[in-house]
Image 1 (cartoon, rainbow, N blue to C red):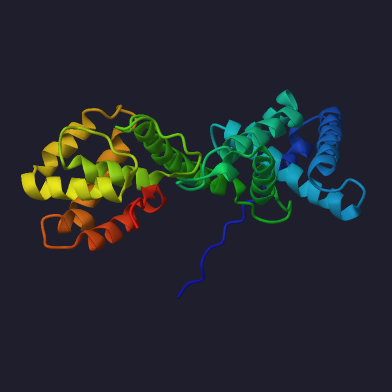
Image 2 (image 1 turned 180 degrees about the vertical axis):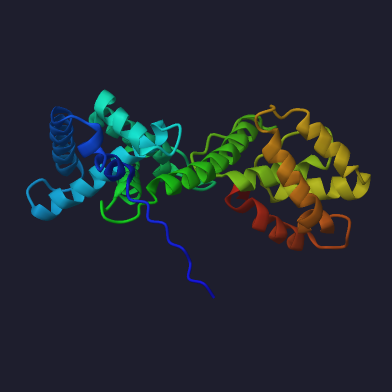
Length: 290
């Protein structure tokens, strides 16, 4: 077996700096070094410790990563010379700010579909931002850095989660009994309830339920034997276009795999069905009966 080929990819800032000797004037190199030193001092003060050698060293690694992330975002091609041009023309401070802004915007996106007060608390928000900045932008000048790739991966993942959360928030605002304003949100649970209850027909949106309402729903479905597909179509007709892909994807999943829907027409007891519903709706259920 042939050994795997390892391609080293130092941080973009390092790759650009290597071109200084041949593609920049001594004055440009001196200005660049001075500005990078200023960024490192600022990072040490705000994110590490400007009073220790270790703190300054960590700040240097964060400066390298922060500027490199900004450069990767700006570049139109994998071109180190273009990166050097950006550094000279725009200045590393502006590029670092661009990199940090990317991290800040990423940190503001939800990590998962379970949202609570912790997620909107400003103190915890700052802590998460700092942790994410350190995770993505710590870049050793002599080693391969994958911060930009990991940033893109997290951005895609979090944007997907955000789409789920926003769809659930819309369903909550249009809950048949009035808007639900609880700060804690189980987005997947809300969507599951809306899809399950939609099979009854009529297009009524259910974003939270309790045992009494669930029992009424089960009895209605067993008595009237509604067309599930017609019920889902009535639900989809009310959903804004921006949220339809999420709801349609979940409908496709529950059509094949939802045990609650599979057992509605069977002799399964209310207790069994409600227990199964808990696995889909989670904290969005209100157990209002003893």
